[in-house]
Length: 239
Image (cartoon, rainbow, N blue to C red):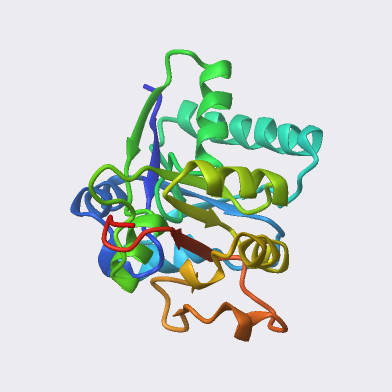
């Protein structure tokens, strides 16, 4: 009998934010599938899981490079899906662990599609996790939306013109993976007069995390990939 494929969100970094269901499933599965952008890099998701659940899993490392080349990505997604399916066909339950939630900018969704294309009848279950979006909002104590406000969540890699357009259309905006995109975003915020309405949050959930509303102090700093910017045009849902 084939195994079951799980996508498990491990939260933003703090192991105490793993859900009870995530911990239960992690105790039961045979194999942890670990995304790695390079063979020598450690898995942050695995480090989080290991602090919350005591178990010796079979670890399957999946080489999934961080690149914008779609053809290259598709090649590695297909290879990883085939590797996962081989384990499932051996009767092993496999859990792909991912930071945050598996349905928000996660590689898991591509692997799920790939596995289902290869084996349409495969059993798949997604265990949601606390996303970085929710965690950082709680940390800085700034609601993502209030009253009739609307909210947009986008990757910060989008162009400056796109970001500017979304700032016009939405009351609140979250820019994900903003570390390397900070200079571009900061210029847009200054142009639109919203630089004082923004909070920069880095490595939320980790011991070295920080946040600041003074974006000017970040201009010459090397900022982590796991960073976001929350822009709230209004305060407390009022103009």
